[in-house]
Amino acid sequence: MTQTTVQLTIPELQLLTALAADQLFRREFIDPKMPGFKGNSAELSLGKSLLNRLRTILDPTRAKQMQAKS
Image 1 (tube, helix red, strand yellow):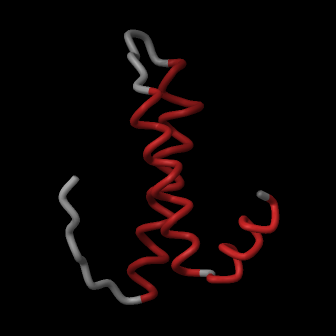
Image 2 (cartoon, rainbow, N blue to C red):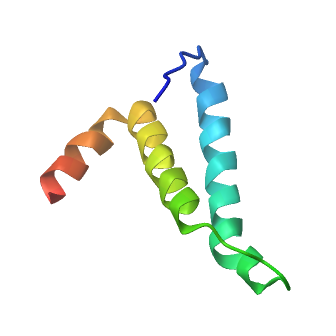
């Protein structure tokens, strides 16, 4: 897997995280109701994982909470 480094400000990362969350919601709950929709569960899972990583970057206490649940 190739890694890429991107520099973002906190407000940019917050906006990106919000937009990603909205898109994931759409792909999980709205798009499946559209005629001809073909879902990709692997992509959806990857998106959710990425969103959790972004949220952890924005709120480091979230990482501690997730570790406590494990």
